[in-house]
Length: 382
Ligand code: GLA
Image 1 (cartoon, rainbow, N blue to C red):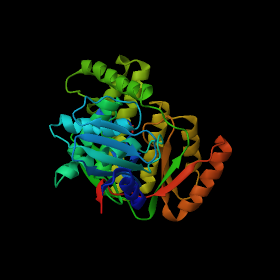
Image 2 (image 1 turned 90 degrees about the horizontal axis):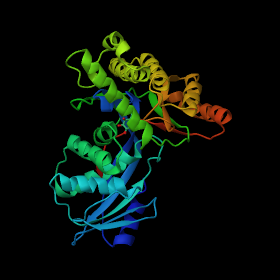
Image 3 (image 1 turned 90 degrees about the vertical axis):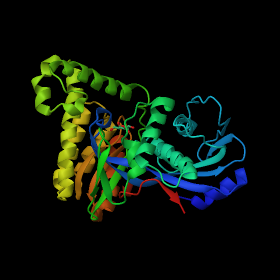
């Protein structure tokens, strides 16, 4: 990141010396559309960050600007805050939640710098929320409860932005650790950090098709899952979410469910089982087994959950055929965005070149391919 430019711009605009905080985007290795079903996910933070430069003011005014977007926003900290349906909602939503949590934030100047690709399914929105939340709370407290911060940022997105996302993105942006994947139980927010062997790279392939799941499809999938739970609850006690349903149980009660709802549930239930197997595989450093689970996850998302698209499928197919590739799947909400690929590091550069050429030929778009490794979560930038 270009922190010096960020600070220089901040001084030029606000005539103050800022403190700078940053939070990463994420890639999900496996466990898709399970977080809002109280299931398991296994994301890693990536080396793409959003930075928030911030300085307190002596009055009660809040000024927010971004280096990537024109429109600045200004308001009084006591104002009734409303969404404007642009990038600033992620910032203002977090400020709103901090106020609701009983804190009394002071006036402040904020300048945002983002390098997480937007609309690519790498959680640029969680990165901005967490960077701002971390900055605001750090200004007031010596220590930050990172789990509470993740929950606060998720509430900002649910309530202010209006996107009913789960906890995964904000959680990993707060708690990620370099060279580790994080297996999270979204029911109780207990997590395990699992080392990723140094010889493998997380290669992210951007289809260059922007996903737009803020409105319709994502929330529809959540509603489908909720309907599945409502119906399955009639089969006996103890079912609070799809997390409580085993594969056998689902098969036994298949007849109760409309076919589409059954397939949605089957994705979630089998995906939870895959994440548990994937954690075992990673602990044994059995990347072949891990890769197989990634392939199954992709198929399930494509056929049962129906959140893939042609470009993602083509990208996965091309990647799977390359030397040194253990596994490939779509990552994030779907309908475009990126795939995640586990690739032997020595092969990563050749993988990038070949996938780029073959995808270009098949789809007519030039993909961005990022060779990354797991990064650290939110932090103050010294
Ligand atoms: C988006 C949401 C997450 C999660 C994924 C799908 O990234 O923000 O909470 O539901 O989709 O796994």
